[in-house]
Length: 227
Image (cartoon, rainbow, N blue to C red; front, side, top):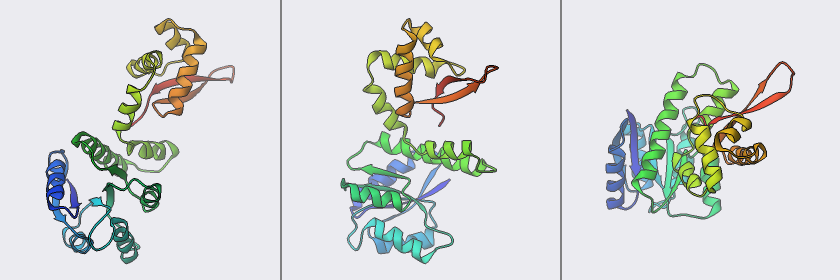
């Protein structure tokens, strides 16, 4: 179980977040804190793996708390944390990333968004614990796994119709496909399929692999994005 500490100055919001976390399999809420000082104490006594951390607390910011914990425990570090806040300024986002935030959820948000990010984090921990060495494929996979599927869903809803069909073709294929395969399947030209596939790769919705044949020239092969 992933031991989770919920930190929010609003008692009702903290309770609501705790109930939401408790609904997600694999997570255990070990406490609620309503100030940085209370959170600091509970980090020591409850030993959480994950903080659901509000930015604005009555005695200091959530990021200030992270900085304090890091300074006090330079070897063990701080628990992983997801920042939950109404702060929308880019400096706050940058600071959160620099301090190692797993994710940044902007209030208000739906339970679905929180659940998807918690599930992504749980899968990331499982993959991390199973990895034996940090080769490039493992590193790439670990980084991509923390990306919330909600972001992919929003992108998919905004895709033009033909591009969405290209993405569905790649996702449903049992093996990696070429632009020619996609073109034949959809009845479009190869350059059209290639153009849409390149955009999908750029947006992080499709993975590109280079397959080297006997001629030595690589063939572009496309597959569903690895999570």
